[in-house]
Length: 397
Ligand code: ATP
Ligand code: MG
Image 1 (cartoon, helix red, strand yellow):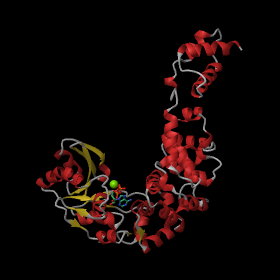
Image 2: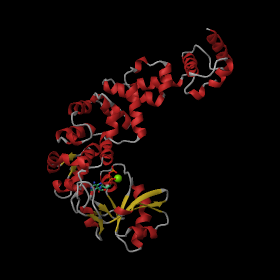
Image 3: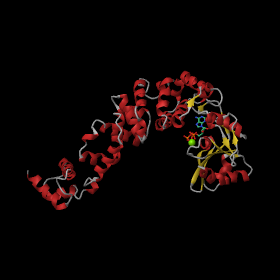
Image 4: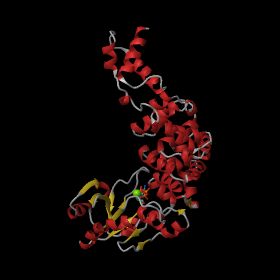
């Protein structure tokens, strides 16, 4: 854990040597105090972005308008952000402009929760004007300043509060919670892409059951894309043994299954997730009707091991019947398949064409599938002459 901070120290030292103030800040300080594994090490400094860029050799101007420069050092990258305040928020979304300031205390004021508003010097001294450490010890999520004001500035903070419930297994401070109950509708103004990030972090956290229950209790779900009419499904979803699921695709699939939607596509689109994410969820949804205990060898081959494992986990979670032996058995069964993908097949469409006097057409694909099925059921060897013999006999019929 210490390693990550130590590795970043030369970056801080360089800023110090050039007369700037610099601190570790945000999630890494919080997680360090919690003795949790640290994600990204974020750095705050009095140096302006241009000054940071001249000081370090390898930088990327990733968010200059927010005062952020990415500094690459020793195979790591660090977000170095200039101390700043945020101007008035016009429409509950994003600051209109940022103002750079000279003191870390000013910068900490703009941060969302007291636990996220602690700075740490290179020597591990804490700057903690909002009693973040106390909140961490009490496992409490408390806004910096009045909740209602902070949620009006940026309504995404309500979703962030609930994702931290899940991620850290903390509780919401009473005022913070009441304020979400009263102002949830403000989140409709926030870009869905930003909500998605926090919602998925909520789904992935170990305290997701608690978090989903708070989402419903505060009615925030009513203002999230297409969840308004589904609080019963969400409740049932939260009751499932979700901790057995391992990927975000599995979590979405189980949620959607519980929602009993007529169409999955438009729902996923309304959440603006990436095409890849959307397609893999749709694929899992499509296969959900088939019971894994009835999968043929061809099903395993067609779906592939990775998806089969996910589907089996989903199936067992939905049916409250988790059994890790079944995952092992499935893996063994897949491993013993004579072919695992079409590239393992020792013939292709061209071979079939050269053995037949027919023209190409849909029969080619159909015949390949037939060959695959026969091989997978051990009726046919995956070997050129054997397949040719089988084919010529089959073609005559
Ligand atoms: P994680 O470990 O999940 O990344 P984090 O606390 O680092 O958690 P980030 O989203 O990476 O969360 O944000 C970094 C820091 O920036 C936060 O700790 C907080 O101080 C500040 N922050 C982020 N989003 C907001 C926001 N919407 N309003 C105010 N401060 C914010
Ligand atoms: Mg972070």
